[in-house]
Length: 175
Image (cartoon, rainbow, N blue to C red):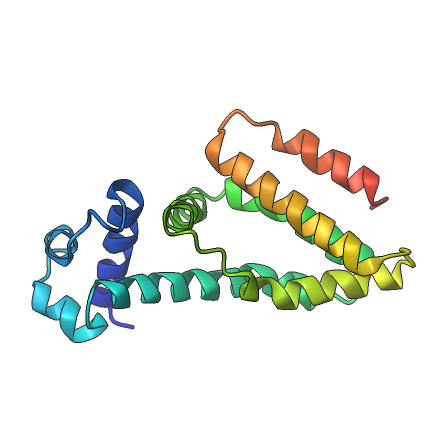
């Protein structure tokens, strides 16, 4: 991807999140990115193509975030890394801003993208199975839901005590 394409996607993500997808025209994106509208059409076809590219970018970044977790062979260490992930993202200002914007778009357009969590879910199920939990699928589902809520809370509420929540979850899972 070229530098201009990245700038277009960054500005489109920012504008879609701030002004809403429906209210943001490709001409606004072009102006914010300092490119011609024609360049947007050449690279992304239309506004929906921009959105698809932004969502794909989110999926790729999610894979990067989860890669260290899903490859972890030790089940307790896998759970620890996953539980610590929202705090790690929150401490990285650029990553936090990116995910904040991604969340806003997904809420507006009612897109969840659960498929991007499939590999992580399988890894969590395997970890809970290795740790001999009675219902590893349910434990994995519960932890995914808790962490989704924790990530959302951490993004929306700067004063939320994520350290306390993280410590509680580590204690709960004995890691």
